[in-house]
Length: 168
Image (tube, rainbow, N blue to C red; front, side, top):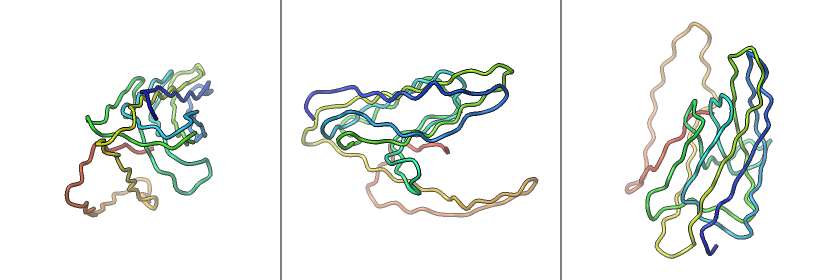
């Protein structure tokens, strides 16, 4: 990876029925011929996007690694990694794009997503950000009930958390 570059993933149109929602996982690939280092992630959405997440993986996998996620209820968002840190992506990187659009109106619409990845040249001295996913798929809260949970997660000394992603 030499010069800075821009790669985009577009998903849509996504039909969102009136008074309903559209939620799915779709695969997408960027056409980077070699490894790239992503310094900035941007999201643009048309329609009422509840949230989205970009994972490294394929539809149907039981485990994927999230790399970028949006805040809840946004149409535009950007995240810059701190100076000197990047997220590395492999050649012709494949992604799983998870999205959830909502529609409270009585008229259907088509939603769309555009994810833009801005890269920097590969060079010595830049820290490659690692990705951790922590989740509990076995949470069961019956209707009209209360549940409490105590848990702990110990991180290694020197670990810097750059961002935390919402649910999807």
